[in-house]
Length: 61
Image 1 (cartoon, one colour):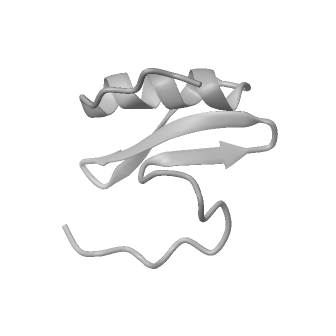
Image 2 (image 1 turned 90 degrees about the horizontal axis):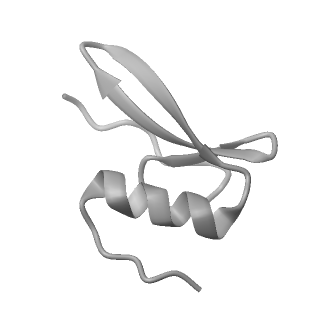
């Protein structure tokens, strides 16, 4: 898989976490297709769910 271009908006968001409208999504690419998984409309909740999907620890705010 090649490298994508640098993010132009939403720079403080971690990798794979995107904001579309008021909702945060976890975005992955599988077999050349992007998969958007809805996480939450609250940043702290979305970040906790993102950490779970990434296999990282996140204690919350």
